[in-house]
Amino acid sequence: MKSNIFTTIFLLPCFLFIVANSFSLDAQTCKPSGKIRGKKPPPKQCNRENDSDCCIKGKLYTTYKCSPPVSRRTKATLTLNSFEKGGDGGSASECDKKFHSDDRLVVALSTGWFKKKGRCLKYIFLYGNGRRIKALVVDECDSTMGCDRGHDYQPPCPNNVVDASRAASKALGVPEKDWGQLEIYWLDA
Image 1: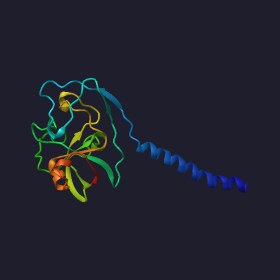
Image 2 (image 1 turned 180 degrees about the horizontal axis):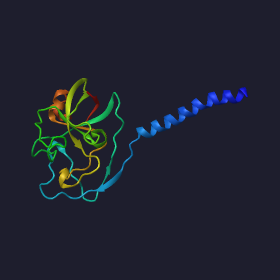
Image 3 (image 1 turned 120 degrees about the horizontal axis):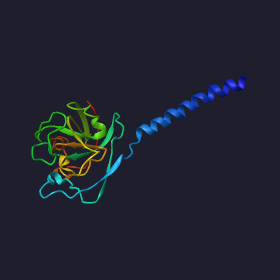
């Protein structure tokens, strides 16, 4: 009888630990949700500002409905985007249906981090290049769709992007030649 109680007391916590960690591992993975096939943009329809990519006809692009889990130090790639009318960001920002000056500290987040507008018009802290700044979330960097007019014929965003105005790169002290591919950390303000 004593050995059964000991076994139960010892094995039950071990079992619960293993089960909890397996769910934790599943929650941390963000697997691709599909692919879309690139279409050739109509003439003058893909804005190449900020070295933006244009979709390539026939190329398969990976899509994501999720992003890596948010933590106290969520790793991301800081990319460059224009939020102004006529800029490579395409249409008005998703959160307020407005265009924003590239001289403001504004960002777009990959689909999973955008949380179906859950972070709209909220601030996040960005850490990079030894500095910290506070930026306003105004848009989604769509990881689920792309290669169409609504996305300026650009591919879907990766699932780990903070797409920022040039003001954010300046505020982080990034040399202009290095804008668009800085590894950063971010967290909710």
